[in-house]
Amino acid sequence: MRTAIYAGSFDPLTNGHLDLIKRASRIFDKLVVAVGSSPEKEYMFSLDQRVAQVTDACTDLGNIEVVRFSGLLAKFVESHKATAIIRGLRAVSDFEYEFQMALMNRELARDVETVFLMPSLKYVYLSSSIVKDVALNGGDVSRHVPECVHQALKTVFAERKNR
Image (cartoon, rainbow, N blue to C red; front, side, top):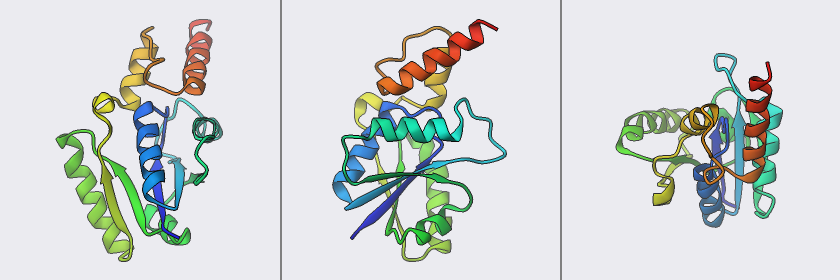
């Protein structure tokens, strides 16, 4: 069984992420979506909320497992007996960082390949940061995120507005 890991913070999950999840799930027998958490990072949504959002958005995909993740990706990948790490490349600006990470992961987990997928053209510009910024400023992000995430964003910003 060929297993791949797609790790990210998914804060929030975008349709670009979902596009990569769906495409990777067609390539691999099993795709583990690892929702990451780091003590150095500040998140809009809690780890439990992000895991729930990814799980909800992927209910129609039978070969997906959504799990919590922290620490070194190479160790996580080996512990799941995965053969590949999925990474998205939106633009040339992503490449240098992702290339360095792929080389380090190869050094730490020699039998694991990094597979780069480009998002569909309609998602090339999309990022979690952009979605948060647009939503924070009252813009409509409903076309850019799964419905469960759209509702969660509306709730967060309504709560902030009422403070």
